[in-house]
Image (cartoon, rainbow, N blue to C red; front, side, top):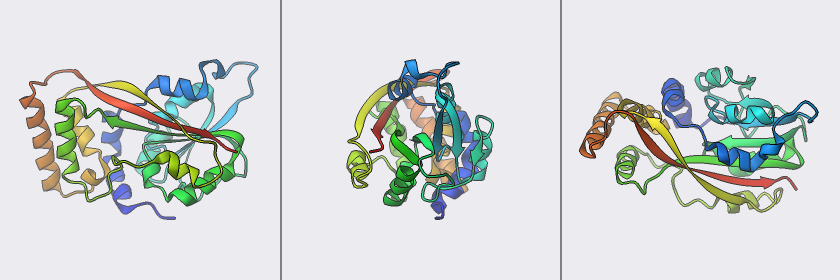
Length: 251
């Protein structure tokens, strides 16, 4: 299974910008999924986590207190960042280099929309033990805030039709596999400290923006700066996001 060419090109070019400018996930989301009481202790069995399509390891870092984590990431430039956090393997969701029922949890942060869902869900079900956790997470810009909505609109103007910010019923997608319990959905407000140039980098790290022409990227960067100026935004500020988690267990 090959990686979507927009993702491969964009993320290989933007890996450093992605690491600098993208938010982590709401820590409360991870605590709700895996339980504060389930942090690794001296007498607790170490669980095995697989962070699938781990990118630069944003979610991987948050999993480390709960068990042994392997990051799987197909794009070499992204994987190099993740490898600084945990062991990292180059592979795709549709062909996992893991034994049957060898994992206690599989997480996917900001990536499931890139997968061939039926194939990936079958592979995830294969490698998860019965009762193991599947957790899909996304960070979305909080477009209820006017300046955030304006920045989002500017970014989406370069979208060739692949953006995941659509009304996709992820619980229904997971349910088609018949391998998991009904999905529980939770949302968390999550602010990320930024400045103007980091917001520009955040825009540049979007896959289809990173894969665009230099002229298009330059024009977008100028537009984002102009938007922020028009709202009187300067210096350090909080960029509001919403973390959404979709959680179920292997039947």
